[in-house]
Amino acid sequence: MDLIIAIVTDEDAGKVAEALAERGYKSTRVSTTSGFLKMSNTTLLIGVESDQVDEALGIIKANCRSHIEVTPPLPTSKHFGPPSFPVETREVEVGGAVVFVLGVKRFEKL
Ligand code: 2BA
Image: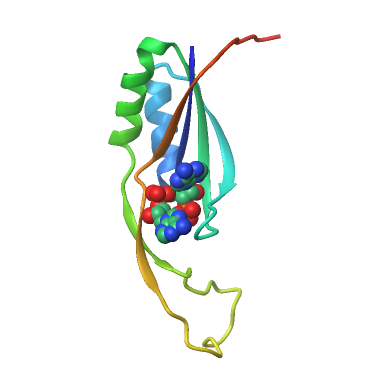
């Protein structure tokens, strides 16, 4: 058995989880915060048999889109007025999905 850890945008998380469920894959969604942009994102935990990894990755890939974010993140509605100092911005490409596949030593439902 393997554990797929997939970091996706919040926007893509629902589509990915639904597409996985349609094909019989179980997943758990964890709300996470990205390290660089400090944006909300979603980490999916998906336990699969080892011969299902490639199919599951295909489903994830088909349902995630990469997009451009401006760093530092633009002010949200919580911040009022223009910044009081010049802010240097840069564009970074985020996603589609950042995926890790780990071998599972043991799986139990107790
Ligand atoms: P963030 O850490 O917010 O990173 C957003 C995007 O910024 C990254 O997209 C990458 O294009 C860029 N980036 C990240 N760190 C950078 C740095 N130190 N200098 C310059 N540019 C940087 P992705 O690579 O698609 O990553 C999307 C999200 O997946 C990341 O959001 C983070 O939450 C997660 N992630 C990516 N690589 C990871 C890793 N090796 N371990 C754990 N989480 C990772």
